[in-house]
Length: 311
Ligand SMILES: C[S@@+](CC[C@H](N)C(=O)[O-])C[C@H]1O[C@@H](n2cnc3c(N)ncnc32)[C@H](O)[C@@H]1O
Image 1 (tube, protein in one colour):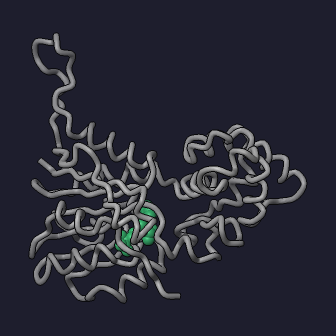
Image 2: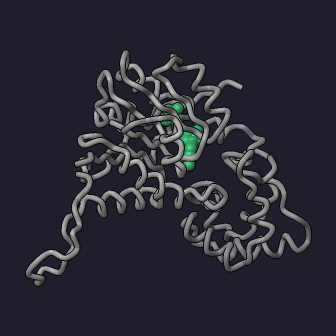
Image 3: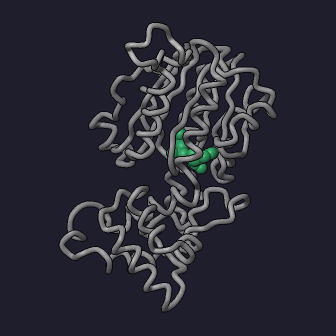
């Protein structure tokens, strides 16, 4: 299948990362290499582009788009394992990191993967089926009503979480919920008709919650950001595009914590915390796409870009 994904905030990312010939840049979410292609051009001919993705389909598409050679290193893996991936590839330090979070358009569009509530497919949602065991069907089949409520509320920010969880538990007692269509039906029945008529698709929040749980997305994001900042050389930059408030909050909090200096109480005569700022945040407010970009690419609508520089 053709891999089509329009890169989001491309001009803003390249402007903020400002890679130059000779830079070592790591794209931790390579996808179809929409951003990586531009970054590769900017670091050429002597710089290095490292592209990481946990999804084979993305790596195959990226290999088609990028110029391959010694200056291009494509790595299959999870950015939660960034230290291991970069050490094993012999990368000495990094000048620029990009994280363009979430799923790519093809992942959403390929019915067999179960990410989309619009297609009938097995409830899978694993980004790396080879290495991950837990599927969305397992979560729906085995989690208690309390745990389902917690993840649907926290990761989906869904106000009807207790009702949806209760319906799932009741439905699975009759027969296992194995497909996206079966789950969508249960979610629709759980949400009052008046609430179903407004806002996004009724299953959107629950599907987001299951995807985050299956792929441990928030935990892995925090690990990846902290590791990336350790690898940055002084003056190097990290750019992160997030697509929902849970991700954005993690980026904002990690950046805030690592840009903070002394945290001792003001009445303490000398500093005892020895807290040194590690980064400088370059985007006090997140950068968001223009109205034109959103009109051209509706998937950009919730994007927020934050950038920081290593001190
Ligand atoms: C939004 S897409 C990136 C699109 C890319 N910037 C482009 O322009 O083509 C996100 C990609 O990150 C990958 N991804 C998400 N979480 C990941 C993780 N924890 N480790 C590695 N790859 C991840 C997904 O497989 C997907 O291909």
